[in-house]
Image (tube, rainbow, N blue to C red; front, side):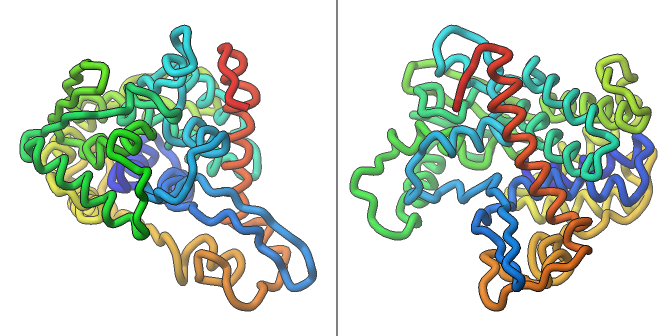
Length: 357
């Protein structure tokens, strides 16, 4: 899923569920920031104090990275939540929509409602939960279920897919003589390119095992939105039993379906802008207001507000620690990432018989 869903749709659902503007903006920002938090270098302050952020994402085509245990844990915790179903590791690692693992993660986040970073934890958890619909069928371990040998969509024939995948390999930078399309396509959902992230898309792919999978994203996205609305309503009510809450109101579901189905652009920022216009113009039932701006980096970003530095790698002068840092969204977000990774890898997955660490 792209920023149009992780930020735009989540903000709309949060406001519809009764969260305040500040709460909705924080939850939505945390959800999207999972895709943008790539810095893991320790932050060193002038007085010698150290804060360690963790990376919840890295470039899809960062071929210089070797897939390792750490990558598997990041994928499993934030993007490709294993359903823990099946006998082998490859089967158990497959991501499936609304799995029991996903529901357990949501309950854990709802239990932390009163924590100082409860909103951030909810946003991070909702990112992983929503992705179980978009990334279903793929896994964060090297597996034949990820090895796509053919893909086409309504407006994207198979030769265009192969050409774009080949160009992506070429654009990796330095030559990678041991990196083939077959190798690359075993890593997560990378070989599917952007198709899981397009709300309107109809697409079909075949794996190296001969399995052909037909996907229609819109019903999956609407089901995800409905379940997320339940989660947000439960959060607002102070409950952990989100499954008992009412479905997304019919008018809201219809208007959201129209907004997603007609917002056909392969650029996620363009889709976000159009979704924001629909929200501001009252085209989404129940909420009519401007969509707050999402600032990924630079002035006004969570990092900049926390430490006064605007460079992603925290280059240059060391920041000066202040008590405000402790209450910053940046620190609370990264603490939420750390909590979720530990909870998923060390507690929830072992409970279902799956160990990734």
